[in-house]
Image 1 (cartoon, rainbow, N blue to C red):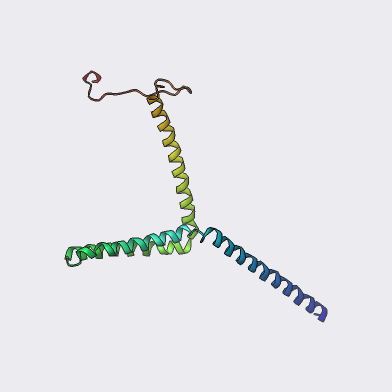
Image 2: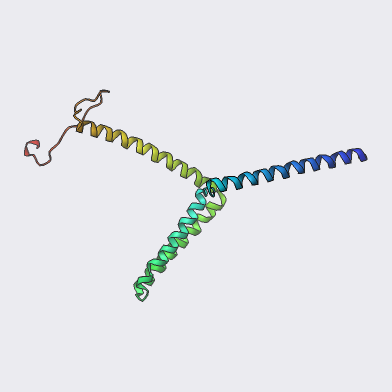
Length: 156
């Protein structure tokens, strides 16, 4: 390779490194600005699961304190801690290998909750329509509600 080609390759590497460094600095500055404006970024679902396991472990440890002298309390606390440790040992490898799975599950859970809320709102609207004096068939042709008195012997 000629001296000119080597010099040109070194210049290209230096330019690429300078761009990479500038981009990293800009990204760090933007992250710092956002952290200052919005607070720390939300944790991933996997990290939230770890926090939940830690909180449950701490709470189980606190539950046995009032009954510290009781042998039944120490046995119950030991069993509970053992269950938490087993659950943690089984979940930790999954979290380590596939942290994005928990993010997807959290998103799916949110979508299921939104669908459930929508269904409940629709049912409540139908239920309250009768209370507003719109019993019988609704404006869209859906059947209304019927009052059933369970204590009335004529309904048998």
